[in-house]
Image 1 (spheres, rainbow, N blue to C red):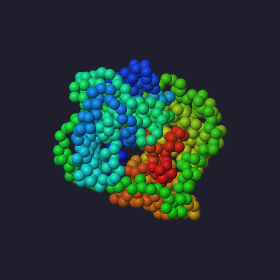
Image 2 (cartoon, rainbow, N blue to C red):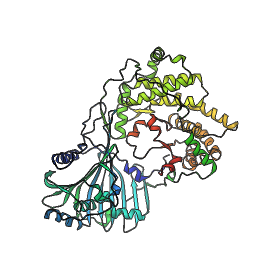
Image 3 (cartoon, rainbow, N blue to C red):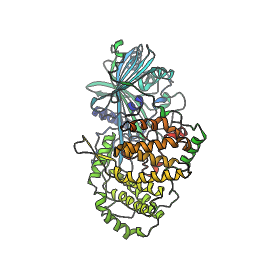
Image 4 (cartoon, rainbow, N blue to C red):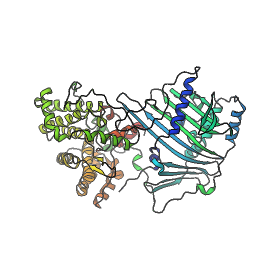
Length: 607
Protein backbone atom coordinates (compact mmCIF):
# COMPACT_ATOMS: atom_id res chain seq x y z
CA UNK A 1 0.00 0.00 0.00
CA UNK A 2 1.46 3.34 -1.04
CA UNK A 3 0.59 6.61 0.69
CA UNK A 4 -0.56 9.56 -1.40
CA UNK A 5 2.16 11.77 -2.83
CA UNK A 6 2.14 15.24 -4.23
CA UNK A 7 2.81 14.97 -7.95
CA UNK A 8 4.17 18.48 -8.27
CA UNK A 9 6.67 17.91 -5.44
CA UNK A 10 7.85 14.69 -7.04
CA UNK A 11 8.36 16.41 -10.36
CA UNK A 12 10.67 18.92 -8.73
CA UNK A 13 12.99 16.14 -7.52
CA UNK A 14 13.66 14.56 -10.89
CA UNK A 15 17.34 14.02 -11.62
CA UNK A 16 18.89 14.00 -15.09
CA UNK A 17 22.28 13.21 -16.52
CA UNK A 18 24.38 16.27 -17.35
CA UNK A 19 24.49 17.45 -20.95
CA UNK A 20 27.89 17.76 -22.67
CA UNK A 21 26.65 20.72 -24.69
CA UNK A 22 25.70 22.44 -21.46
CA UNK A 23 29.22 21.85 -20.18
CA UNK A 24 30.68 23.56 -23.21
CA UNK A 25 28.23 26.44 -23.24
CA UNK A 26 28.58 27.28 -19.55
CA UNK A 27 32.36 26.99 -19.59
CA UNK A 28 32.56 29.12 -22.71
CA UNK A 29 30.40 31.81 -21.15
CA UNK A 30 32.49 31.78 -18.00
CA UNK A 31 35.72 32.10 -19.95
CA UNK A 32 34.28 34.94 -22.02
CA UNK A 33 33.27 36.79 -18.89
CA UNK A 34 36.72 36.31 -17.39
CA UNK A 35 38.37 37.70 -20.50
CA UNK A 36 36.58 41.04 -20.21
CA UNK A 37 38.87 43.20 -18.09
CA UNK A 38 36.24 45.83 -17.29
CA UNK A 39 34.16 43.29 -15.37
CA UNK A 40 35.02 41.91 -11.91
CA UNK A 41 36.23 38.30 -11.92
CA UNK A 42 33.72 35.52 -11.30
CA UNK A 43 33.84 33.75 -7.99
CA UNK A 44 33.97 30.43 -9.77
CA UNK A 45 34.09 29.22 -13.31
CA UNK A 46 30.86 27.48 -14.13
CA UNK A 47 31.21 24.06 -15.65
CA UNK A 48 29.17 20.89 -15.59
CA UNK A 49 31.74 18.16 -15.32
CA UNK A 50 30.65 14.63 -16.17
CA UNK A 51 29.58 12.75 -13.07
CA UNK A 52 32.36 10.74 -11.48
CA UNK A 53 31.25 8.37 -8.75
CA UNK A 54 32.94 5.78 -6.54
CA UNK A 55 36.57 6.79 -5.97
CA UNK A 56 37.26 8.92 -9.06
CA UNK A 57 38.37 12.57 -8.51
CA UNK A 58 36.08 15.23 -9.96
CA UNK A 59 36.91 18.38 -11.88
CA UNK A 60 36.92 21.44 -9.65
CA UNK A 61 35.45 23.86 -12.16
CA UNK A 62 31.90 23.27 -10.89
CA UNK A 63 28.67 24.92 -10.05
CA UNK A 64 28.44 26.00 -6.40
CA UNK A 65 25.20 27.66 -5.22
CA UNK A 66 21.57 28.80 -5.91
CA UNK A 67 19.04 31.49 -6.87
CA UNK A 68 15.39 32.18 -6.15
CA UNK A 69 13.86 32.60 -9.59
CA UNK A 70 10.50 33.57 -8.13
CA UNK A 71 11.76 37.13 -7.65
CA UNK A 72 12.04 37.64 -11.39
CA UNK A 73 8.76 39.56 -11.63
CA UNK A 74 9.49 43.22 -12.36
CA UNK A 75 10.33 45.14 -15.51
CA UNK A 76 12.30 48.29 -14.85
CA UNK A 77 14.51 50.42 -17.06
CA UNK A 78 13.82 50.69 -20.78
CA UNK A 79 16.97 51.18 -22.81
CA UNK A 80 17.71 51.68 -26.46
CA UNK A 81 19.16 48.52 -27.96
CA UNK A 82 22.70 49.01 -29.22
CA UNK A 83 22.05 47.45 -32.59
CA UNK A 84 19.23 46.81 -35.00
CA UNK A 85 19.69 43.07 -34.40
CA UNK A 86 18.82 43.29 -30.72
CA UNK A 87 15.88 45.61 -31.43
CA UNK A 88 14.60 43.03 -33.90
CA UNK A 89 14.99 40.28 -31.32
CA UNK A 90 12.69 42.09 -28.89
CA UNK A 91 10.08 42.71 -31.57
CA UNK A 92 10.20 39.15 -32.90
CA UNK A 93 10.03 37.46 -29.52
CA UNK A 94 7.04 39.51 -28.41
CA UNK A 95 5.27 38.64 -31.64
CA UNK A 96 5.04 34.91 -30.97
CA UNK A 97 1.96 33.42 -29.34
CA UNK A 98 3.28 29.86 -29.30
CA UNK A 99 6.67 28.35 -28.65
CA UNK A 100 8.34 25.22 -27.36
CA UNK A 101 11.51 24.99 -25.30
CA UNK A 102 13.53 22.82 -22.96
CA UNK A 103 14.48 23.92 -19.44
CA UNK A 104 17.24 22.40 -17.34
CA UNK A 105 18.25 23.38 -13.84
CA UNK A 106 21.65 22.40 -12.50
CA UNK A 107 22.17 22.84 -8.78
CA UNK A 108 25.52 22.13 -7.15
CA UNK A 109 26.70 22.34 -3.57
CA UNK A 110 30.46 22.27 -3.11
CA UNK A 111 33.19 21.36 -3.41
CA UNK A 112 33.13 21.15 0.38
CA UNK A 113 35.94 20.75 2.90
CA UNK A 114 35.12 17.07 3.39
CA UNK A 115 35.63 16.35 -0.30
CA UNK A 116 31.99 16.15 -1.39
CA UNK A 117 30.31 17.96 -4.20
CA UNK A 118 26.60 17.37 -4.69
CA UNK A 119 25.06 18.09 -8.09
CA UNK A 120 21.57 17.54 -9.45
CA UNK A 121 20.13 18.34 -12.83
CA UNK A 122 16.42 18.52 -13.54
CA UNK A 123 14.56 19.54 -16.64
CA UNK A 124 11.47 19.55 -18.77
CA UNK A 125 10.01 20.16 -22.23
CA UNK A 126 7.37 22.89 -22.27
CA UNK A 127 4.75 23.78 -24.88
CA UNK A 128 3.39 27.29 -24.48
CA UNK A 129 0.31 28.85 -26.04
CA UNK A 130 -1.17 32.18 -25.03
CA UNK A 131 -4.56 30.82 -26.11
CA UNK A 132 -4.64 27.31 -24.66
CA UNK A 133 -2.13 27.49 -21.80
CA UNK A 134 0.91 25.31 -21.12
CA UNK A 135 1.78 21.65 -21.28
CA UNK A 136 4.98 20.36 -19.63
CA UNK A 137 6.63 16.96 -19.83
CA UNK A 138 9.15 16.03 -17.14
CA UNK A 139 11.61 13.22 -17.78
CA UNK A 140 13.87 11.12 -15.64
CA UNK A 141 17.19 9.65 -16.68
CA UNK A 142 17.45 8.22 -20.18
CA UNK A 143 14.26 9.90 -21.34
CA UNK A 144 11.79 8.10 -19.07
CA UNK A 145 8.55 10.09 -18.89
CA UNK A 146 7.81 11.00 -15.29
CA UNK A 147 4.96 13.52 -15.31
CA UNK A 148 2.80 15.56 -17.65
CA UNK A 149 1.46 18.79 -16.20
CA UNK A 150 -1.20 20.94 -17.87
CA UNK A 151 -2.28 24.53 -17.22
CA UNK A 152 -5.46 24.76 -19.33
CA UNK A 153 -6.69 28.33 -19.72
CA UNK A 154 -9.75 27.49 -21.82
CA UNK A 155 -11.03 24.95 -19.32
CA UNK A 156 -9.69 26.78 -16.23
CA UNK A 157 -8.19 23.48 -15.13
CA UNK A 158 -4.94 22.09 -13.77
CA UNK A 159 -4.08 18.46 -14.55
CA UNK A 160 -1.01 16.50 -13.44
CA UNK A 161 -0.34 12.88 -14.45
CA UNK A 162 2.34 10.90 -12.63
CA UNK A 163 3.31 7.80 -14.59
CA UNK A 164 5.44 5.92 -12.01
CA UNK A 165 2.66 6.24 -9.43
CA UNK A 166 -0.12 5.64 -11.99
CA UNK A 167 -2.06 8.55 -10.56
CA UNK A 168 -3.37 11.92 -11.61
CA UNK A 169 -4.55 15.19 -10.09
CA UNK A 170 -7.31 17.29 -11.68
CA UNK A 171 -8.57 20.52 -10.14
CA UNK A 172 -9.63 24.07 -11.06
CA UNK A 173 -6.89 26.62 -11.66
CA UNK A 174 -6.22 28.96 -8.79
CA UNK A 175 -5.61 32.66 -9.22
CA UNK A 176 -2.00 32.08 -8.23
CA UNK A 177 -1.56 29.47 -10.98
CA UNK A 178 -3.08 31.76 -13.61
CA UNK A 179 -0.85 34.61 -12.45
CA UNK A 180 2.17 32.33 -12.55
CA UNK A 181 1.36 31.34 -16.11
CA UNK A 182 1.42 34.97 -17.20
CA UNK A 183 4.21 36.28 -14.96
CA UNK A 184 6.67 33.55 -13.98
CA UNK A 185 9.86 34.00 -16.05
CA UNK A 186 11.13 30.56 -15.07
CA UNK A 187 8.30 29.09 -17.11
CA UNK A 188 8.21 31.77 -19.81
CA UNK A 189 11.57 32.61 -21.41
CA UNK A 190 9.94 35.39 -23.45
CA UNK A 191 9.76 37.42 -20.23
CA UNK A 192 13.39 36.72 -19.37
CA UNK A 193 14.53 37.83 -22.81
CA UNK A 194 12.36 40.95 -22.74
CA UNK A 195 13.63 42.01 -19.35
CA UNK A 196 17.22 41.43 -20.30
CA UNK A 197 16.87 43.58 -23.41
CA UNK A 198 15.27 46.30 -21.32
CA UNK A 199 18.04 46.08 -18.73
CA UNK A 200 21.63 47.29 -18.54
CA UNK A 201 23.19 44.44 -20.51
CA UNK A 202 26.57 44.17 -22.20
CA UNK A 203 27.33 42.41 -25.45
CA UNK A 204 29.43 39.24 -25.37
CA UNK A 205 30.30 39.14 -29.05
CA UNK A 206 30.19 36.20 -31.45
CA UNK A 207 30.21 32.49 -30.73
CA UNK A 208 28.95 29.21 -32.16
CA UNK A 209 26.22 26.96 -30.73
CA UNK A 210 25.45 23.64 -32.42
CA UNK A 211 27.09 24.86 -35.59
CA UNK A 212 25.12 28.11 -35.72
CA UNK A 213 26.72 31.55 -35.54
CA UNK A 214 25.36 33.37 -32.50
CA UNK A 215 25.72 36.66 -30.66
CA UNK A 216 25.32 37.02 -26.90
CA UNK A 217 24.50 39.55 -24.24
CA UNK A 218 25.01 39.39 -20.49
CA UNK A 219 23.33 41.14 -17.57
CA UNK A 220 24.84 41.09 -14.08
CA UNK A 221 22.49 43.36 -12.15
CA UNK A 222 19.77 41.27 -10.45
CA UNK A 223 17.90 44.41 -9.35
CA UNK A 224 16.58 44.79 -12.91
CA UNK A 225 14.64 41.58 -12.36
CA UNK A 226 13.11 42.39 -9.01
CA UNK A 227 10.05 44.40 -7.95
CA UNK A 228 11.86 45.59 -4.85
CA UNK A 229 15.42 45.43 -3.56
CA UNK A 230 17.22 42.45 -5.07
CA UNK A 231 18.55 39.82 -2.68
CA UNK A 232 22.32 40.24 -2.21
CA UNK A 233 24.24 38.05 -4.60
CA UNK A 234 27.77 36.71 -4.35
CA UNK A 235 27.65 35.99 -8.07
CA UNK A 236 24.96 36.60 -10.69
CA UNK A 237 24.73 36.54 -14.47
CA UNK A 238 22.04 36.20 -17.12
CA UNK A 239 22.96 35.50 -20.73
CA UNK A 240 21.02 35.27 -23.98
CA UNK A 241 22.45 34.03 -27.29
CA UNK A 242 20.64 34.65 -30.58
CA UNK A 243 21.02 33.06 -33.99
CA UNK A 244 22.64 35.67 -36.22
CA UNK A 245 20.52 34.69 -39.24
CA UNK A 246 17.08 34.37 -37.62
CA UNK A 247 17.65 36.94 -34.85
CA UNK A 248 15.89 34.56 -32.45
CA UNK A 249 17.14 33.32 -29.07
CA UNK A 250 18.69 29.84 -29.06
CA UNK A 251 20.17 29.73 -25.54
CA UNK A 252 19.18 31.46 -22.27
CA UNK A 253 21.18 31.02 -19.10
CA UNK A 254 20.66 32.26 -15.52
CA UNK A 255 23.50 31.61 -13.10
CA UNK A 256 23.52 32.85 -9.51
CA UNK A 257 24.87 32.41 -6.00
CA UNK A 258 22.98 34.25 -3.25
CA UNK A 259 25.28 35.85 -0.73
CA UNK A 260 26.18 33.40 2.03
CA UNK A 261 24.73 30.43 0.16
CA UNK A 262 26.75 27.27 -0.60
CA UNK A 263 24.61 26.53 -3.65
CA UNK A 264 24.88 27.68 -7.25
CA UNK A 265 21.88 27.19 -9.49
CA UNK A 266 22.18 27.46 -13.23
CA UNK A 267 19.01 27.45 -15.31
CA UNK A 268 19.46 26.73 -19.03
CA UNK A 269 16.69 27.19 -21.58
CA UNK A 270 17.31 25.94 -25.12
CA UNK A 271 15.89 23.85 -27.99
CA UNK A 272 13.51 26.68 -28.88
CA UNK A 273 10.78 26.28 -31.50
CA UNK A 274 9.47 29.83 -31.91
CA UNK A 275 5.99 30.02 -33.44
CA UNK A 276 5.58 26.24 -33.50
CA UNK A 277 2.03 25.27 -34.53
CA UNK A 278 0.39 23.91 -31.39
CA UNK A 279 -3.00 22.35 -32.03
CA UNK A 280 -5.78 22.43 -29.46
CA UNK A 281 -5.59 18.65 -29.16
CA UNK A 282 -2.13 18.90 -27.65
CA UNK A 283 -3.74 20.46 -24.60
CA UNK A 284 -6.21 17.61 -24.09
CA UNK A 285 -4.85 15.43 -21.25
CA UNK A 286 -4.94 11.70 -21.92
CA UNK A 287 -5.09 9.86 -18.60
CA UNK A 288 -4.13 6.20 -19.09
CA UNK A 289 -6.63 3.52 -18.13
CA UNK A 290 -6.21 2.32 -14.58
CA UNK A 291 -4.65 5.53 -13.26
CA UNK A 292 -6.31 6.59 -10.01
CA UNK A 293 -7.09 10.08 -8.70
CA UNK A 294 -4.47 11.34 -6.30
CA UNK A 295 -5.51 11.56 -2.66
CA UNK A 296 -4.66 14.95 -1.12
CA UNK A 297 -1.46 14.94 0.91
CA UNK A 298 -3.24 15.70 4.14
CA UNK A 299 -0.23 15.56 6.42
CA UNK A 300 0.97 18.80 4.85
CA UNK A 301 -1.96 20.63 6.41
CA UNK A 302 -1.66 22.91 9.42
CA UNK A 303 0.18 21.21 12.27
CA UNK A 304 -0.58 23.77 14.99
CA UNK A 305 -1.91 22.00 18.13
CA UNK A 306 -5.70 21.87 18.35
CA UNK A 307 -6.04 20.55 21.91
CA UNK A 308 -4.27 20.78 25.26
CA UNK A 309 -2.88 17.28 24.78
CA UNK A 310 -1.48 18.21 21.36
CA UNK A 311 0.05 21.37 22.79
CA UNK A 312 1.68 19.37 25.59
CA UNK A 313 2.97 16.83 23.06
CA UNK A 314 4.46 19.60 20.89
CA UNK A 315 6.08 21.20 23.93
CA UNK A 316 7.55 17.88 25.01
CA UNK A 317 8.94 17.29 21.53
CA UNK A 318 10.77 20.61 21.63
CA UNK A 319 11.95 20.32 25.24
CA UNK A 320 13.10 16.72 24.98
CA UNK A 321 13.96 15.96 21.35
CA UNK A 322 14.93 12.43 20.49
CA UNK A 323 18.51 11.53 21.56
CA UNK A 324 18.69 14.63 23.76
CA UNK A 325 19.17 12.83 27.09
CA UNK A 326 22.96 13.09 26.95
CA UNK A 327 23.31 16.52 25.35
CA UNK A 328 24.73 17.85 28.61
CA UNK A 329 27.80 15.63 28.43
CA UNK A 330 31.23 16.94 27.46
CA UNK A 331 32.53 14.78 24.63
CA UNK A 332 36.09 13.45 24.75
CA UNK A 333 38.56 14.37 22.03
CA UNK A 334 39.07 11.25 19.92
CA UNK A 335 40.90 12.88 17.02
CA UNK A 336 44.16 11.25 18.09
CA UNK A 337 42.71 7.75 18.47
CA UNK A 338 43.81 5.25 15.80
CA UNK A 339 41.97 1.94 15.51
CA UNK A 340 42.24 -1.27 13.47
CA UNK A 341 45.42 -0.06 11.81
CA UNK A 342 43.56 2.52 9.72
CA UNK A 343 45.16 5.94 9.25
CA UNK A 344 42.40 8.55 9.63
CA UNK A 345 44.62 11.16 7.95
CA UNK A 346 45.03 9.15 4.74
CA UNK A 347 44.00 11.09 1.64
CA UNK A 348 40.54 10.31 0.30
CA UNK A 349 39.25 10.57 -3.23
CA UNK A 350 37.07 13.55 -3.98
CA UNK A 351 33.48 12.73 -4.92
CA UNK A 352 30.92 14.45 -7.10
CA UNK A 353 27.56 12.83 -6.44
CA UNK A 354 24.18 13.70 -7.87
CA UNK A 355 21.26 11.29 -7.82
CA UNK A 356 20.33 9.21 -4.83
CA UNK A 357 21.37 6.11 -6.78
CA UNK A 358 24.87 7.52 -7.24
CA UNK A 359 25.14 8.33 -3.55
CA UNK A 360 23.91 4.90 -2.48
CA UNK A 361 26.01 3.02 -5.02
CA UNK A 362 29.08 4.92 -3.88
CA UNK A 363 28.32 4.11 -0.25
CA UNK A 364 27.84 0.46 -1.14
CA UNK A 365 31.20 0.37 -2.91
CA UNK A 366 33.03 1.76 0.11
CA UNK A 367 31.18 -0.35 2.68
CA UNK A 368 31.85 -3.50 0.67
CA UNK A 369 35.56 -2.96 1.36
CA UNK A 370 35.10 -2.61 5.11
CA UNK A 371 35.59 -5.67 7.33
CA UNK A 372 32.42 -6.94 8.99
CA UNK A 373 31.80 -5.59 12.46
CA UNK A 374 31.55 -9.07 13.97
CA UNK A 375 34.96 -9.97 12.55
CA UNK A 376 36.78 -7.06 14.23
CA UNK A 377 34.75 -6.57 17.42
CA UNK A 378 37.18 -8.38 19.70
CA UNK A 379 40.23 -6.66 18.21
CA UNK A 380 38.50 -3.30 18.50
CA UNK A 381 37.54 -3.95 22.13
CA UNK A 382 41.17 -4.73 23.01
CA UNK A 383 42.42 -1.56 21.33
CA UNK A 384 39.79 0.63 23.01
CA UNK A 385 40.67 -0.83 26.38
CA UNK A 386 44.40 -0.34 25.84
CA UNK A 387 44.07 3.25 24.66
CA UNK A 388 41.06 4.53 26.63
CA UNK A 389 40.32 2.05 29.40
CA UNK A 390 36.69 1.57 28.32
CA UNK A 391 36.05 -1.33 30.69
CA UNK A 392 36.43 1.03 33.66
CA UNK A 393 34.10 3.70 32.24
CA UNK A 394 30.66 4.55 33.62
CA UNK A 395 27.51 4.43 31.53
CA UNK A 396 27.63 8.16 30.87
CA UNK A 397 31.31 8.03 29.96
CA UNK A 398 30.68 5.21 27.51
CA UNK A 399 27.76 7.06 25.91
CA UNK A 400 29.81 10.27 25.61
CA UNK A 401 32.61 8.29 23.97
CA UNK A 402 30.11 6.68 21.60
CA UNK A 403 28.74 10.07 20.55
CA UNK A 404 32.27 11.40 20.00
CA UNK A 405 33.16 8.36 17.90
CA UNK A 406 30.07 8.87 15.76
CA UNK A 407 30.99 12.49 15.15
CA UNK A 408 34.49 11.41 14.14
CA UNK A 409 32.93 8.90 11.75
CA UNK A 410 30.98 11.67 10.00
CA UNK A 411 33.97 14.01 9.96
CA UNK A 412 35.76 11.36 7.92
CA UNK A 413 32.86 11.17 5.40
CA UNK A 414 30.92 8.33 6.97
CA UNK A 415 29.81 5.62 4.56
CA UNK A 416 31.69 7.14 1.62
CA UNK A 417 35.07 6.74 3.24
CA UNK A 418 37.97 4.29 3.39
CA UNK A 419 39.01 5.26 6.90
CA UNK A 420 35.87 6.21 8.86
CA UNK A 421 34.49 2.78 9.67
CA UNK A 422 36.67 2.06 12.77
CA UNK A 423 35.00 4.98 14.54
CA UNK A 424 31.50 3.91 13.56
CA UNK A 425 32.27 0.42 14.81
CA UNK A 426 33.81 1.83 17.99
CA UNK A 427 30.64 3.84 18.66
CA UNK A 428 28.60 0.68 18.34
CA UNK A 429 30.86 -1.26 20.69
CA UNK A 430 31.03 1.29 23.52
CA UNK A 431 27.28 2.05 23.44
CA UNK A 432 26.69 -1.69 23.52
CA UNK A 433 28.79 -1.78 26.68
CA UNK A 434 26.68 1.05 28.12
CA UNK A 435 23.51 -0.83 27.23
CA UNK A 436 24.77 -3.98 28.93
CA UNK A 437 25.35 -1.94 32.09
CA UNK A 438 21.88 -0.33 31.89
CA UNK A 439 19.67 -2.64 29.76
CA UNK A 440 16.40 -1.05 30.89
CA UNK A 441 17.41 2.56 30.35
CA UNK A 442 15.58 3.57 27.14
CA UNK A 443 17.87 6.57 26.52
CA UNK A 444 20.95 4.32 26.56
CA UNK A 445 19.22 1.88 24.21
CA UNK A 446 18.46 4.80 21.88
CA UNK A 447 22.17 5.61 21.74
CA UNK A 448 22.99 1.98 21.02
CA UNK A 449 20.44 1.84 18.16
CA UNK A 450 21.80 5.10 16.73
CA UNK A 451 25.35 3.73 16.83
CA UNK A 452 24.32 0.52 15.08
CA UNK A 453 22.62 2.46 12.30
CA UNK A 454 25.60 4.79 11.88
CA UNK A 455 27.69 2.26 9.96
CA UNK A 456 24.88 -0.10 8.89
CA UNK A 457 22.18 0.61 6.28
CA UNK A 458 19.02 -1.43 5.90
CA UNK A 459 19.97 -2.83 2.50
CA UNK A 460 22.57 -2.53 -0.23
CA UNK A 461 22.43 -3.08 -3.97
CA UNK A 462 23.56 -6.38 -5.35
CA UNK A 463 26.36 -6.50 -7.90
CA UNK A 464 23.90 -6.67 -10.79
CA UNK A 465 21.85 -3.80 -9.28
CA UNK A 466 18.67 -5.80 -9.80
CA UNK A 467 17.95 -6.87 -6.22
CA UNK A 468 18.55 -5.63 -2.70
CA UNK A 469 20.66 -7.39 -0.11
CA UNK A 470 18.92 -7.00 3.25
CA UNK A 471 21.01 -6.26 6.32
CA UNK A 472 20.13 -8.84 9.00
CA UNK A 473 21.02 -6.47 11.85
CA UNK A 474 17.69 -4.65 11.40
CA UNK A 475 15.20 -7.54 11.63
CA UNK A 476 17.50 -9.10 14.23
CA UNK A 477 19.30 -6.96 16.81
CA UNK A 478 17.56 -3.64 16.13
CA UNK A 479 14.11 -5.21 16.16
CA UNK A 480 14.88 -6.97 19.46
CA UNK A 481 16.09 -3.73 21.07
CA UNK A 482 13.01 -1.80 19.99
CA UNK A 483 10.70 -4.65 21.04
CA UNK A 484 12.23 -4.63 24.53
CA UNK A 485 11.75 -0.87 24.73
CA UNK A 486 8.13 -1.26 23.68
CA UNK A 487 7.42 -3.67 26.52
CA UNK A 488 8.99 -1.24 29.01
CA UNK A 489 6.98 1.67 27.57
CA UNK A 490 3.70 -0.24 27.88
CA UNK A 491 4.47 -1.21 31.46
CA UNK A 492 5.31 2.40 32.37
CA UNK A 493 2.15 3.74 30.73
CA UNK A 494 0.03 1.08 32.44
CA UNK A 495 1.40 2.39 35.72
CA UNK A 496 0.06 5.87 34.94
CA UNK A 497 2.77 7.62 32.91
CA UNK A 498 1.78 9.71 29.89
CA UNK A 499 3.73 8.55 26.82
CA UNK A 500 6.01 11.17 25.28
CA UNK A 501 7.53 11.98 21.89
CA UNK A 502 10.45 9.61 22.41
CA UNK A 503 8.01 6.78 23.09
CA UNK A 504 6.29 7.49 19.79
CA UNK A 505 9.65 7.42 17.98
CA UNK A 506 10.68 4.13 19.56
CA UNK A 507 7.34 2.46 18.87
CA UNK A 508 7.17 3.77 15.34
CA UNK A 509 10.65 2.36 14.72
CA UNK A 510 9.43 -1.01 15.94
CA UNK A 511 6.46 -0.88 13.58
CA UNK A 512 8.69 -0.07 10.61
CA UNK A 513 11.24 -2.79 11.34
CA UNK A 514 8.51 -5.39 11.92
CA UNK A 515 6.74 -4.32 8.75
CA UNK A 516 9.61 -3.76 6.32
CA UNK A 517 12.29 -6.08 7.66
CA UNK A 518 10.55 -8.94 9.42
CA UNK A 519 7.28 -8.87 7.45
CA UNK A 520 5.63 -9.42 10.83
CA UNK A 521 2.36 -7.63 10.08
CA UNK A 522 0.66 -9.05 13.14
CA UNK A 523 3.30 -7.56 15.43
CA UNK A 524 3.23 -4.28 13.52
CA UNK A 525 -0.55 -4.21 13.84
CA UNK A 526 -0.41 -4.63 17.63
CA UNK A 527 2.07 -1.77 18.01
CA UNK A 528 0.07 0.45 15.65
CA UNK A 529 -3.14 -0.13 17.57
CA UNK A 530 -1.36 0.72 20.80
CA UNK A 531 -0.25 4.07 19.34
CA UNK A 532 -3.80 4.77 18.20
CA UNK A 533 -5.20 3.90 21.63
CA UNK A 534 -2.78 6.31 23.35
CA UNK A 535 -3.24 9.18 20.89
CA UNK A 536 -5.83 11.25 22.77
CA UNK A 537 -3.89 11.09 26.04
CA UNK A 538 -0.42 11.42 24.56
CA UNK A 539 -1.36 14.17 22.09
CA UNK A 540 -0.01 12.59 18.91
CA UNK A 541 -3.43 12.74 17.22
CA UNK A 542 -1.81 14.56 14.29
CA UNK A 543 -0.52 11.20 13.09
CA UNK A 544 -3.65 9.10 13.57
CA UNK A 545 -5.67 9.72 10.41
CA UNK A 546 -2.64 10.58 8.30
CA UNK A 547 -0.63 7.43 8.98
CA UNK A 548 -1.70 5.22 11.84
CA UNK A 549 -5.21 4.36 10.65
CA UNK A 550 -4.07 3.52 7.07
CA UNK A 551 -1.24 1.46 8.57
CA UNK A 552 -3.69 -0.40 10.79
CA UNK A 553 -5.87 -1.19 7.79
CA UNK A 554 -2.92 -2.44 5.74
CA UNK A 555 -1.48 -4.62 8.51
CA UNK A 556 -4.90 -6.08 9.35
CA UNK A 557 -5.17 -7.10 5.71
CA UNK A 558 -1.77 -8.75 5.75
CA UNK A 559 -0.15 -6.02 3.66
CA UNK A 560 2.92 -3.87 4.19
CA UNK A 561 2.80 -0.10 4.44
CA UNK A 562 5.53 2.49 3.89
CA UNK A 563 5.51 5.69 5.87
CA UNK A 564 7.77 8.38 7.29
CA UNK A 565 8.42 10.22 10.52
CA UNK A 566 10.55 13.31 10.04
CA UNK A 567 10.57 16.18 7.62
CA UNK A 568 13.87 17.47 6.35
CA UNK A 569 14.93 21.05 6.06
CA UNK A 570 13.82 22.48 2.73
CA UNK A 571 16.61 22.46 0.18
CA UNK A 572 18.56 19.73 2.01
CA UNK A 573 18.63 17.35 -0.95
CA UNK A 574 20.59 15.64 -2.40
CA UNK A 575 22.84 15.55 0.67
CA UNK A 576 20.03 14.03 2.75
CA UNK A 577 20.36 10.82 0.75
CA UNK A 578 23.62 10.23 2.65
CA UNK A 579 21.52 9.41 5.72
CA UNK A 580 18.77 7.38 4.06
CA UNK A 581 18.27 3.61 4.14
CA UNK A 582 17.95 3.66 7.91
CA UNK A 583 15.04 3.90 10.32
CA UNK A 584 13.26 7.24 10.45
CA UNK A 585 14.55 7.93 13.94
CA UNK A 586 18.12 8.13 12.64
CA UNK A 587 19.81 11.43 13.49
CA UNK A 588 23.32 11.30 12.01
CA UNK A 589 25.86 14.04 12.81
CA UNK A 590 25.02 16.66 15.42
CA UNK A 591 24.61 19.40 12.81
CA UNK A 592 21.89 17.37 11.10
CA UNK A 593 19.89 17.05 14.30
CA UNK A 594 19.21 20.78 14.13
CA UNK A 595 17.86 20.42 10.60
CA UNK A 596 15.35 17.60 10.82
CA UNK A 597 11.95 18.36 12.26
CA UNK A 598 9.02 16.10 13.17
CA UNK A 599 6.09 16.74 10.87
CA UNK A 600 3.80 17.67 13.74
CA UNK A 601 6.05 20.70 14.37
CA UNK A 602 6.30 21.88 10.78
CA UNK A 603 4.18 24.95 11.59
CA UNK A 604 7.10 26.30 13.64
CA UNK A 605 9.00 26.96 10.40
CA UNK A 606 6.04 27.91 8.29
CA UNK A 607 6.38 24.92 5.96
